[in-house]
Length: 397
Image (cartoon, rainbow, N blue to C red):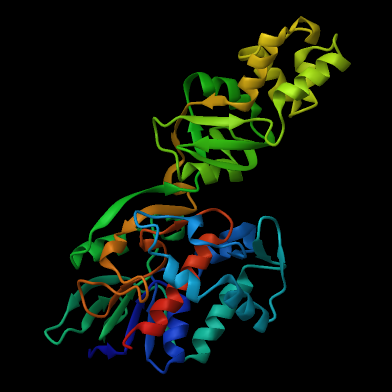
């Protein structure tokens, strides 16, 4: 059987791959997208609780982690959240801001996938799902030749948008990293990001039966702090604050929680002591945080007693414990529940303006497979859109 020939082959039918394909196709290039899943955009569909947190209006390069913090600047500057919002509104997708610049579909994430499909259709992009790649080679003429379960394909340009290792149940794999290494690219160590933390030993014993308790906290690790909600689970700690800090924390690192963020605990406790001297400490704390947590703290790390028995030093110690509560996390829940993969293809070997390989002509890497990882809240989608457009505008240019 003869090979199917096109101008650009895109491996991966996710956010970055579809955006790149539509952009390249709109330039008149013949584009084929290959995805081993049975449908495109699977991670888009499940994102944001089914409503897709498709961008963040506050996106800046400071919202991303990478060994080269400057790499993402060019693409993000040229394709901003407002560009994507214009696309969303052109397709008449109603949306709203939830918090902190996070934009969601009013109805369903299916609308974003349908929009990308429509953009690809309009640009003449061919999409092959349930298509597994068996081998990738470079011909003597410098073209890329792929052997797949749906036949052979060749093209002068190849875009790798195969994602990372997060959520393997959705089909995630290390294929993109293996392909990068095949072509001589360095791949920086990967680990789960935006993922719940697990507890063991004493901390697990203290918190395990508090599963379901939620409260605002400020979580700090390695000089970075995130203020948002925390949720106690049967295995450890989750919620936006913990998912955010997980990208900055690694086993063995110190982790502290401010259980009264935005408040001066010492002042609050002194006021409570003056107004309710006979009240028990656990009763006062129950007015400041979930009662079950307040009682557990008084049972384990704070000595419960009437407020009038707390002298200035004891009051200061309680305040310090509440605002610098040390947690020893044992690990994370791993790629199974991680929203993103930290690390990836070394950006020092890619062009920041075109996502092109500096090692192999007409080879590009975009999206999550690259060592650029955003915060929780729509930033990773914005990187997918921006890197996809940067590549789509430049490939074979």
